[in-house]
Image (cartoon, rainbow, N blue to C red; front, top):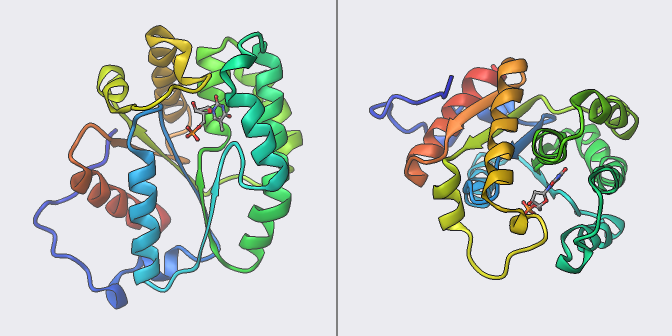
Length: 226
Ligand code: TMP
């Protein structure tokens, strides 16, 4: 199900790229396991949108608002290792509720492209498949949290767990410290979501070189948003 692009496809001039008209007013999520290269692809997509003159509202989870950034600190603080998974799920959702109200809904109303670094797909993978909460329980809280604001497309950057681990450097946060088996389940959690709802998800092989991943991302967006 991984989408690839024709390597010989000529590069599109910005004024001929259909994404110029397809992206405004949409809500896209970039997601995947820690170390999947999401930040790099996110930055490249933002730069590409700028070249297309598409205004992007960039948001990240947890965080993206004053309240959400404080919640992020609690969530990622290694000293909070006693935090139970249900608390964790509710805090991620709390940060999300604030982000939706303060930034996501207003940006969609202004016809901007909302580009989110993680969303409920992360909760389903980390607190759900990896953490043990049922998808039904997360979906119930998710419905209360989002009030119906859901992404048009969720892009999953899939990568082998060992390759991903090798990409993470510096001091590990509370989530990154959870160990290999946990992160293997996170990966499986993403793949299960794609399988359950292939219409809403775009699966990319993020083990490929950066350039190739980005080309598949653009090709996937052109097809899926058309
Ligand atoms: P980041 O490193 O991409 O900023 O994400 C922070 C960490 O939080 C990352 O390890 C994934 C995790 N996370 C969850 O466990 N559940 C969630 O709902 C979200 C948004 C992130």
